[in-house]
Length: 596
Image 1 (spheres, rainbow, N blue to C red):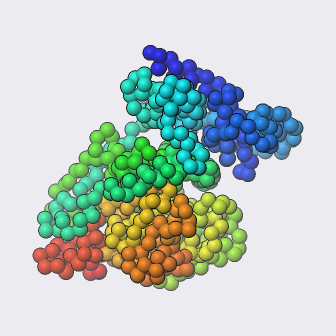
Image 2: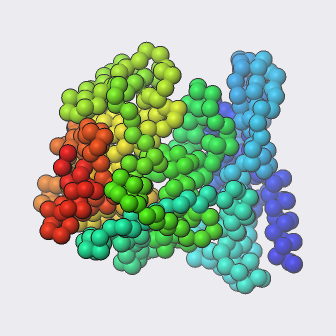
Image 3: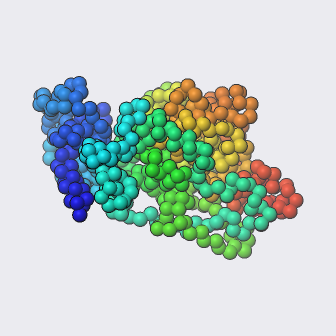
């Protein structure tokens, strides 16, 4: 009873204490301070989204701008934690949509000439996380006072988990987990459940002699060895706060969300709830991967809105991946084998490109593409050069458009940000594919190639199911919050099509990607280490195997198919010509075996 009263009173108090303001321009940032010292925090607001981060009790003077209406902007000063009103300045009255978070709800306003009306109200998904962070800070002192102090601080200073209200709840109820995880569970109950998909077992109706050919096909997606898990746990204990969200991750999420909102508005599709669901589902996939790895209590994934560092997932794609991770419905994924009578009907025994979760482009006509007005002429040249290289080495053709096409197309957009090089969906998406490029990483053509190959359906090379046979991953130097960027791809979703691992692939990441210490490698080649490690992450152009993959993906007749997602893995093990299996392979794995 005491616990419930304490929790309710704290929640009620916090709702009254934490401020969140309306939308600002893309380069403005609101900074506000909570009203009560124990909940002192700073809310960073970029593109209308607020996130709470710890604030020192005393700090330098900060000047901020708060847009109070479409008619004025109030300039504030903060000195040593106190707000001082500065000046009010007029701003132009224009028509635009603004977003405001009010308690549990997120409202969208349409402003025109200073008058506003609510056009949509949705639950504010970030509210509970922010509230939980504030309450954990507030109760830290209470827990210590009751003799329940946590682990203190790590070497970098941020407060580590433990010692907050989670321990108070443990003490009074015998439960486990902190307040933040409890609130997360509460929010999850309010959300619609993840739909349970009827996924099929790729090993069904496969000859017994082939089921044990490739050992890593039996490994569950996201699983981690005890040694690797121990390295990651040590990083979280001694080097970084694996529960904290970095400012870079927060800013990237807000930037991407705003750009996707603009993109959807341009087509008049979707609403704010659908956009929030997309981002929430992506984060759920990342959390589910950590859970599969046994790290869910130690690591909170970067909530940056992207998967695998530079790819965007549709809600449907995330839900499919969540089902593969056993999160569909309330139970494990239900494998539903059907009894195909032929290779043609057995085709649906796998979820990969021959199915429709990740869609291919129709290349009967050139793929239309268009440039956003944000892209300069020299940046357009980089993109055109990338598309020309693809067309010169494959059957894929592209056609530049001066105006937005009506059907599927690629829309290249620039985002001036140092947080990423490029972002793209995997495969064709509706109503069109935005490809976001920052042009902040150099090698503009190579980055455009990499992201365009994502749009065409290519995944990252360094997370192939056979990657551990080719590279060594140093988990002791990887930021655990980016575990999803190194978790081996789901073998039930992605196939190699029999193309060999390629250190020089345009789809490989650099040797020090996601490094805690950028001077040390996170990946090293197991073969010819020095030369091949230097190749990792090259962005000069397509490798020979990149070209082979694209041609197998797009440039074969319709009759040239694989009926099983594991065909690529079997082909790389020489099963195509192995006596006893070669007949089945020639009937079911024609593409990966190079028979058409």
